[in-house]
Length: 267
Ligand SMILES: Nc1ncnc2c1ncn2[C@@H]1O[C@H](COP(=O)(O)OP(=O)(O)O)[C@@H](O)[C@H]1O
Ligand SMILES: [Mg+2]
Picture 1 (spheres, rainbow, N blue to C red):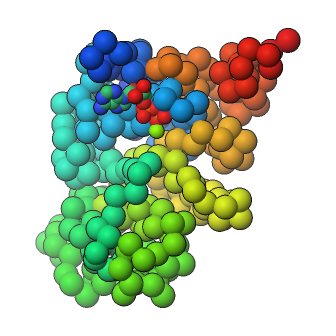
Picture 2 (picture 1 turned 120 degrees about the horizontal axis):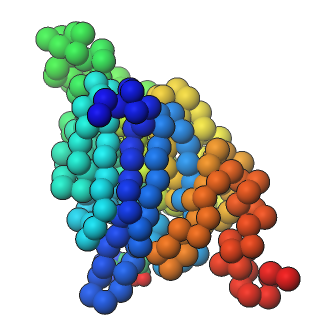
C-alpha cells in the first residue's frame, strides 16, 4: 500500500504485549495521519509508556501490527525493527525518565543526536551529494537553532545534569528533533514542570508541529492539559482503550470520568 494513497503515517492494529502473566496492553489500535497531534492519556500503569516502547522498537509486541510509511510511501513493519533503525526512518521519542548524557555538555548531547538523524528527507534526495553528510559547521549551526528555539542556547556549554529539571526535559525534545523525525513520540514532556513552564511547553509543542510538519503522539496523564492542544485523544485504562475521540467527547465520557475519578464520580 502506498502511504500517500492510504493517507496515513502510522497504522497500529490490535497491538498487545504480555509481561509474565500480565497483559500490559490489549488490542491497541490507532491511525495517525500526517500532521496530526494526538493525545494518549490514562491513569498511572495504564500502559501508555508500554505503547511507546512498542512503537519505538524498545519492546517487541506479543501480537498485532504496526505499519509506518515514510515520505516516499515506503511501508515499514515497525514491530520487527529496533530503536536505531526506527530513528533512521523518522520515528523519534522522548522518555518519561529523562535520558541525557549528564556529564556531557548540552551542545554535545544534541550533536550526538544529530549523528543518528534521518537523512532521507525530500530535500536530501534532491541534493543527495551535497547533503548526504552534514559537515561540522552545519551541525553546529543546526544545534544552535534547535537550542535557541527552546531558549536554552545560553546554556549550551553547561553539563546537562546541571540544568534545572524543566530545561532537561526541553533538551530531551531537542535531541529527539535533532534526529529529524516525521513522527515524534513525547512521553510526559511536562512531568515535574510548574504550571507556567507547562503552558509554555504545550505552546512550543504546537509550534514545532507546524514548523517541522511533524506528527505527534503525546502522552500526558493530566486530561485538561492535552485538551488544549490535541485534536484527538485516546484513553487507556488497565491496558485497554476505553475511549477515543475529540477532547469534547472524551471529557464527558462516563468510562473516562470513572477511570480518573473513581466510581463515585459517575452518577
Ligand atoms: N518491562 C516490564 N516488565 C514487566 N512489567 C512491565 C514492564 N513494563 C511495563 N510493565 C507493566 O505494564 C503496565 C503498564 O506500565 P506503563 O506502560 O509504564 O504505564 P503508564 O505509562 O501508563 O503509567 C504496568 O503494570 C507496568 O508495571
Ligand atoms: Mg508512563
